Length: 420
Image (tube, rainbow, N blue to C red; front, side, top):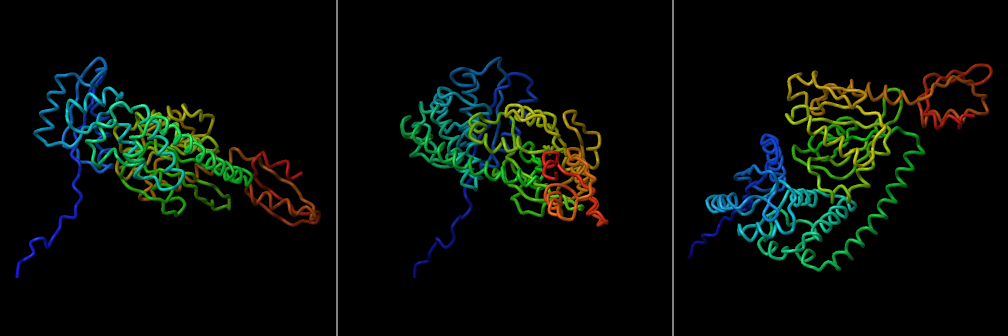
């Protein structure tokens, strides 16, 4: 009898080997930090980073991103390390992508394609998938020159998730038709979102939007506060879809916490445009809860990215509470951290629960600052109006006296007229 030598099979998926490439137009340390983050993105996408290369220049090379000398050096590294691809830290023009791919003989992608690929892998809801496909098609419709040749080298791996090769090989007219279809579908989704938002607004429940840099711990904090089970991983863009959960303070006041997609440096404009309706959810919140990873050495840059993105979305004039998170990783060193743009600052660990009571107290204080104090006797026949206070505000005292019901309460100013 012949022995079957194929009794076991290798089940592990072979990781794509990639080299990170960047051009330093200014401080090399800043470029190193940016490449560190690009490496995290590559890891999230399932690639193995086997090396990196930085070239200092006054400007990007218009045809090849890096200069010819660095291209020759990169060729040697690709051969020595047997790399499958390179990832550039900036968005490439169609000509740069085409030329680099031809000269290097491997797949070439940029930071934008990498982020879009991660979004395609992590989108769970119908809205998220529609937004990702729209962003990918918008990007690739402007990069059709040479895309066929680049796609022929891909054969799967990072940068290939989402619409798929067949959709990317169609002409501009078909892509425009698909974009138009996606826009129509998203308009319906936006209508539903606006209906939900109007329902929350009419209920008078204060809404707190959790914003912050990707992987700052927003989902972990939402889970800690509300007991929900939103996916929380130590990876960039682990969660993309907006999630809203209810929380009740000890005095009965209800709050709504909404988690939003994380921000990142060099966030592709195609993504900002596609995810605008989701990101703008923060604009309808009563309070912004800005979560910062206090253990990250680049937290100042990350905070600036968050505020710059909010400014681009025209989201301002909101009370801001900054929560310096991950204090369990800094051994108490977070106490010295400040945020001049915030109205309140707290130091927490969403993972261990440290400082959460302080955060709730600050949220309670901020919510109450927008409330109107009411002390009134309601005739017994108007007792139903007290339910308005219970639904939209905070009932401090309720006492039955000879002339009616004595009430002390706090209620949002916009509901005050309903008590008359």
